[in-house]
Image 1 (cartoon, rainbow, N blue to C red):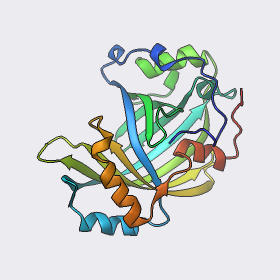
Image 2 (image 1 turned 30 degrees about the vertical axis):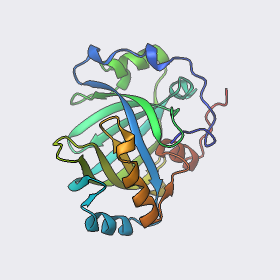
Image 3 (image 1 turned 60 degrees about the horizontal axis):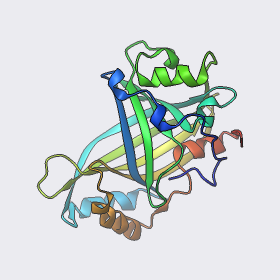
Image 4 (image 1 turned 90 degrees about the horizontal axis):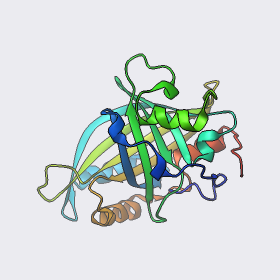
Length: 243
């Protein structure tokens, strides 16, 4: 979901085309994120609906192990990451840690279509700007010697379902049911979000569109008015630059 209308439009100081290539580091991934972001008042009806519809529109829906995600969103005091058109997230999921840059602008209005670059954090990694791969290189280019500060944190319990098309072994996408609590830098809880996200993995969002529409209609879901970054910025009372 685009941030437009939720927080000020970033001044793009660096285009995604000038980002360091993912080939610089084997643990890095430069990708395109395609997903529907839907807000819910209650996730229980969604769970029941998914349990009752293991197959729909020539798609098979299989449960996956849940995840607990701990995310920290960071930027410099003068918002250099934001002003360059990105959000910076550090994520811990079990024993895996990673840093991700997500573009703030969506290329589409009907679903989130954003560029992202992810780099796995080596054990004991402290400063993201010292990472050896593309995320570290990008940060050194954009923030120079400015330190990063915590904007807010998010803790998410994620229930996951793989979506398979026909008899294909590789999933075409994933449905995530997210219960997210937002916290300020002082760890005071700010807000809770209930979201259903349907991510496309095979670059063909049209194939999952009927499933998303059925979910929306049956479970009374609505397009999220803001994504988690925008919600966290708002809940924390932060004011990104307008120019």
